[in-house]
Length: 362
Image 1 (cartoon, rainbow, N blue to C red):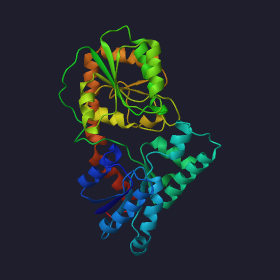
Image 2: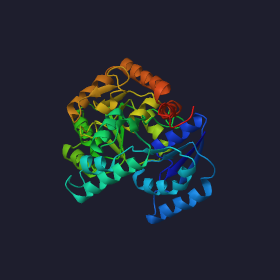
Image 3: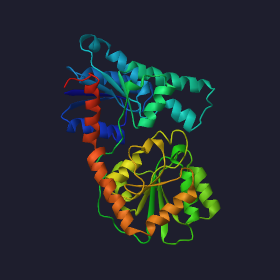
């Protein structure tokens, strides 16, 4: 089986790493054709050139890599002649909807703006140009089917997972006290301001420290809030290379997921939850529809109320006081990752779905 993995994408991003690695583990030859993510118009010119030199022979599947919307138009054009000879199915990775992300979650523009019209149009048209769209949760599948007026049977939920050759348990360098970890890009669905609230509720417990990694939209707001609270229990760390992430995760006693309570929060199963599971860590994250198939409160992770710093603080204290519970949660999370969310399992699920839809031969 040959797969053309094509688009303007970051090969180091978790979703792309999982798909490429998982397909190879299922016996596929994966031909990558990447125009890169920088350079404006030049990235599309590079994509055309690389398609001409690398996309030789017959492919059984074409997958348009995340972020896929803008690339989809060019990819479909490039494949026009090939699909006349052999109707290879096109799968688009709709990991994030532009309309949902920029308009509904980050609120960069109003829903009545021309930007909103544009983002919804490009989302829907890109999906229409593909045979199948993949998303990261069943909640996202239901949302896109309704919002973009697409047949739900043309959308497949493929959980994100993570690259288990990078994210895995490893010995910690050791630390004093109780370390709570979070990494992210500070967007509303992640709810970083509620983590600052939790740190404020816990500031009188001198054993508890937070390490917060990353930057983004709400970063300055969070730093200002921490300053107003007079917090000294947070270690702020800039963005780090992906390969360094396991060291920080494995050093922590508890790892934090997402807490925003926004609409996208309920539809997005965050990368970081799978990264923590792969490392076998005790996890606290907000209750969301996106985690309906993944989370089991008190068994593989602890759930708290979304948009509620006090409840998060209470759950941190619960785990601080119960070493055995932390160990059980981490062990169960790690085992479930190995059983269900590793790249081979996830891509095996996608390939079987395509076979069931008769888009891929047995």
